[in-house]
Image (cartoon, rainbow, N blue to C red; front, side, top):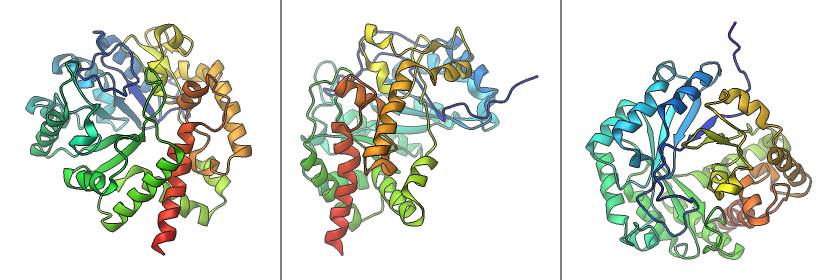
Length: 369
C-alpha cells in the first residue's frame, strides 16, 4: 500500500543542474563556477519517484551555476522524469538565469514545460558593473537581449536584483528601470556575507533603512510593479491589525528548502549552504537521493545537527526580537556565514533586510501622511 506524505517538510526544491556559470559576478557566493559538473537523469528520476507519494504541489527551482549552461539536450533529459507529475498538477518548474543564454530554442523549451522564469539583473547599466563574464566583459547588454527574447515569445518573467552600497542611491532611476523593463515582479536581495562572498559591499543599517524608505516612496508614486518586499510588509501589516502577531508568525508555513547538488547530495534550510567550501559543505549534507528517497531524507533532516541548532536560534528570536512576527526567525545561511553558528539571533542581514525594510516603509508612510 502506497503511503501518501501529508507533511513533507518542504514546498520548494532547488535543483542544481550544473555547477558551471558563464559569468563571474563579483559578489557571487558559489564556488566551483568554472568546474564542469552536470546533474544526471538518474538524480532527477530518483527525485520524481519520491515525489509521487507527496500529496502537495511542489515548486522546483532550477538554479545555479547558470542553469541554461546545461544545454537544451541535457536539460530535456533532466526534466522529462517530472512530466507525469507536472501533467497532474503536482509540480511546477521555474528557472533562475542570468539571461545571457536565452534564445528562441530556449524560449520554446520554457513554454513547452510551462516554466516560470526569473532573471538576475541589478538595475540600469551603471548598477550592473559587477555582473561580468570571465574575461571581465559586462553582461548587461546580453541580459537585456535575453529579456527581449522572452518578450518576443510572450513569456512573463520576474527579476531578482542585488542591492549594495554601490547601487542603492538613486531609487527613482532604479525603480523606473524595472517599471519599464516589463517584468511581472521585482525581488530585491540585499548583498550578503555568505559562501565565497565574505568581503562584500554590504550596506550600513542606516543606509539600508534609507534605501527602503526612498524606494517605497518611488514605488508609491507609481505603484504599478509588484515588489516582493513591499508585498511582504503590507501583508504583515494587514495581518497584525487583524490577528495577534504571534499567531501570524506561527501561521507561516515552515519550509526546509531541500537543495540538491549535481551529484544528488541534499542540504536543507538554505540553498546558500551549498556554497560552502567542499570540506565545509560535507557537514551539511543530510543524504543523497541516489541512495535514499528524498522524503525519507527529509524526515531525518529535521534532526540534523544544524537543523536542531537553527531551531534554538529561532526560539531565541521568538523570545527576544520585536520583528519575529515579520521574519519568523531569520535566515539560516546568514546566521552561519556571519557568525559560524545557527543558534544565534540577530545578524547584519536581519538588520539590513528585515528590520530596515519595516522601518524604512514606516518612515515613508509617516512622511506621506
